[in-house]
Image (cartoon, rainbow over all chains, first blue to last red; front, side, top):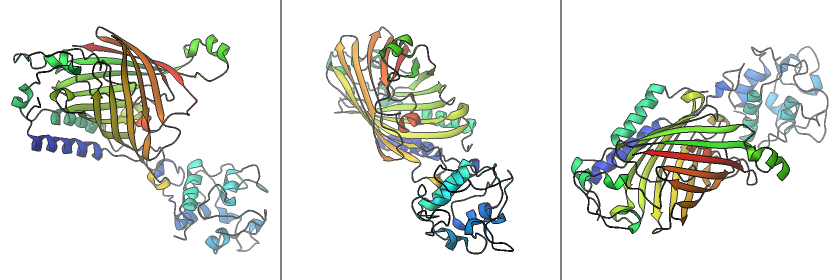
Length: 154
Length: 298
């Protein structure tokens, strides 16, 4: 025999439990993993500002310290000071002809990521050349995410 | 790690679970069904002890969990239960059988251990706390048996909610909300289907990932091979959202002895909380030996 229940009241309590549990929905903070660049986000303008143009608090050198055309030829022929987006996205590397600096949607295949991680098949040195310190794992993850999302000029 | 959920808020959540799990009125609580579990016997309900059915041993549902998944077994009001979970962290597939034997199947290695206590706050409602040494995870949980199968419903329906947090409930909170559908197979066992939403299963921030939630449909079963011996199995497929590794799965053999249930289990995960199960097993060919021991106090 089924017991009689005031279903409206039961439903109300069920909804309250659902709201209480949903209210605890949680997320890790991006700033927890980006270390010396707590405001780093996976957008090109933000990466340009925090990574390319800024020496961070851990001592990792800004990319434009070497990759600039101001007063000197850019290191490796890569100029990140004037038009970094045009210099990276879908552009081949001068060091490795078959490699493309940034392939939208393919962070693992992008030479930029390989150079920052220092994988075995890169030409030359891991970047930044005067490292360590290099980019942290979290900083590289943010750049990978920007590439994974299509490497937009945002 | 984010600290959006303070311990005080977590305690409030548990109290809220306990409060809202109270049956809508006392009269409904007094209306106990006339038949016992599993269709074995019919016993008139004694009005002076409406919780007697909950205190009676259920021969096909002896424990509050399958291996890791919760069951809809009711905990009597003001009754309690204690459970130990133990997973040896040596994979049974490492090395040859001689290596395995020399390590006594993992007894010489470290283990993931959990201690759990649950309490019946009202008829059909129970809350509990579990602490494991996996990242010092604390899980708070509650289950409310909304539609007991013994009341004549074709399947039992219970609500289950939990929140687990690492570092002694300071970091990485994973709330979960789901239902437990149960169906007893006469005197021979019980089946469970458990759709559950689990939040924050991805350790990366949401800005860097596509999914931070996982929707699982846990499936479990307990089959009575002897009057007090059971073969148990469960699998926890992730049907949507973040799904690293492989689906968590376990199987076990267990023995009920009075108020104790002793279970020897094999799992492809060391996880025991809902958040850990949603994050999946190591691989389909990596299995760990473990055991659960439950003691009921009612």
